[in-house]
Amino acid sequence: YSSEGRGGGQWVTCELESKELMAICLKRVHGLDKVKLLDASFLWTEPHSKRLKVKLAVRKELFSGVVLQQQVVVEFVVKNHYCKNCHMHAAQIDWSSVVQVRQKVDHKRTFYLLEQLILKHKA
Image 1: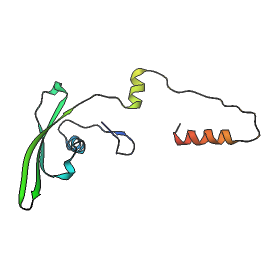
Image 2: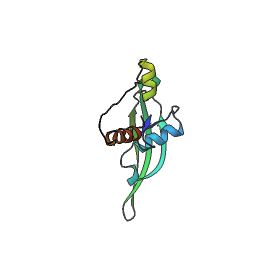
Image 3: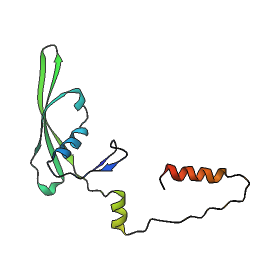
Image 4: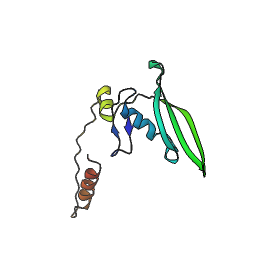
């Protein structure tokens, strides 16, 4: 799983029906911050189906004294992806290169700009 909110896209390995996977799934449910989550559990699905079902019990107070409690089933689709390094390794492509830069001017602004770009992109 690649999480954009965790420091720029870290990959996290989770076992099926684990606490970590439940936390990731709950972060992906929109509108969950507007209700109170009472319970969350995984529902059984076929292992080869690439689907996860999570049963949520939520509660919200609509008016003074009127409470709505409901159970909702949310379905997630599992998509297999490689991280960037694993993809490069699996493709067996050499992605490294060497570049030589030359210039004939009195100032060094171009080299300073290139150096800043290299540092910025961690190249």
